[in-house]
Image (cartoon, rainbow, N blue to C red; front, side):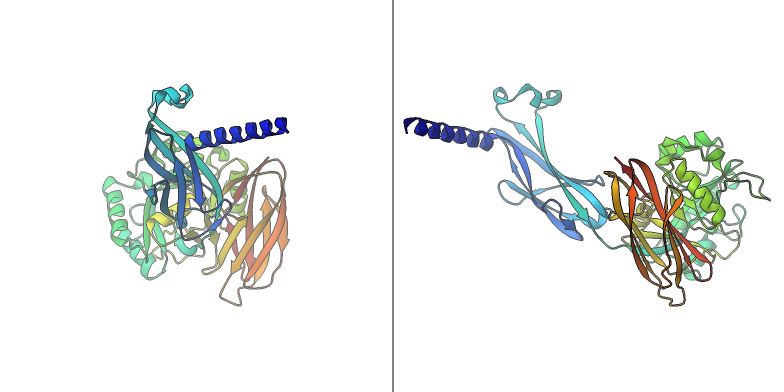
Length: 446
């Protein structure tokens, strides 16, 4: 009995000591939302922060996977809160990180490693996984058009006005040929883009088309029309300046009648430019082959359907680029383009959504090798625009097909991803030979 009492006392003493140690330890705990929650709209993020005796809390911040940093405000003595707008985040898996910084304390009680870089500031953090799910709006646009400043007709003001009022586009860009533009003409294009930009109604971008023997590439929001003619130097400059890029009318084989090639020197890959080359025109079988060649080469490009107008019918072509964005603003449209959240379509009102394991098209995800659900959702208000066929491509080859024969359809298909790097996209064929291509989802399977 005496031994049992001594053991009980020893356990009690150990618990008291442990409780004291925990009470004096610094910690961060995320109270809300809970790990694994599905988030939409605005949510309150709340955290409890405990500092050690003698220390003074400096700040508490929330950081998102997008890179947003939000200062959290005190709610109670040890509890902090901030409102997070999840519509600024992409859909799918995300991580929320709360970091607390403290100053001061009894230096004699701190381990030397806790004073990193001999700083008096110490940091503690907590992280939770969440899943974001917010609806997108569908916006139709054209990102490749010319005026009389290069090889087209009319002026930039004419182009923006026509695209808005006649073609009724949601977004539009004038992209005259770089070698033919003067500085004054480029400045006028920028000025007209700013003049016609109307958030909520019509979003304008501007850019230039690099035009060389290796092919043509659009770059957007350019500060100057002057670009290097050497492809590798151009890639490096675009990467350094973070210029959003767009491969134009690509082709694996030479096209009769063209005095230039559109294979961009064999589609050779540039890590520096891969960050900024976000789109490629995919409007026919020839460009589909080039799309696959670019993806096989390692490029992370989404599908675009721009018309390359040289006449005065800007936006009234046969194909369009659709951007999935939270709102009709320049910031939101550019975010969709940078995120490769686009598709190319010959249908003026077909809405396409494509996900892999709940992640948007354009996403780059890492998963354990195995089978994951690819989801294709199609909606067309025109009952005669039936969907003849849906093809799902895995690493450039058809992996599954479906024949809905309906104007609107939802298709869930399991796809196995073996260890390695993969990409997957869908092609949709409708009545009247109208074709739509999605941007890919890239999967790193381990």
